[in-house]
Amino acid sequence: MNKINSWKWLSIGLLLIVILFTCNSCGRAIKQFNPNAPVVIAFYPADKTQGIATDTYISARFDKQLDPTSITNSSIFVSSLTGSLTGSVTFDAVSQSVLFYPTYLLSFSTTYTVSLSTLIKDMDGNSLEVPVSWSFTTATN
Image 1 (cartoon, rainbow, N blue to C red):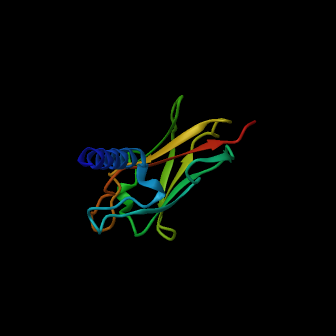
Image 2: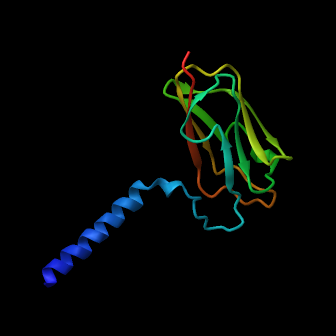
Image 3: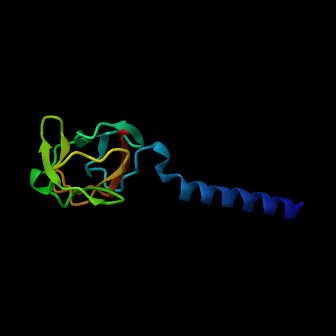
């Protein structure tokens, strides 16, 4: 009986470990250690979206005002398998959004990954606590 209980608890423990390491936040907001850190509350294009127009812009909306001087080409990266994109980066204070406008049209049928770095800070100097990433795929030709 004790051997069966031991195996049962070991199985449950292993299952929990697998879930924790493969969950990738399970679609929920990432728990922050600093309650004052800025949090991304929405992004465009949405994560895993397909069929996005090649003339799109990219944005990440935050829960608070950011320090505009922390929004630079070093704080947002957009890349595909062929390399990183160049473009202009701005902060829109009204919508509390970081905006990235690619220099050139995006390629058709290409998956792009957007990454926001911890260099992004709010007006009180609190940094984005963990890097935030998402991806989307452009439309076919």
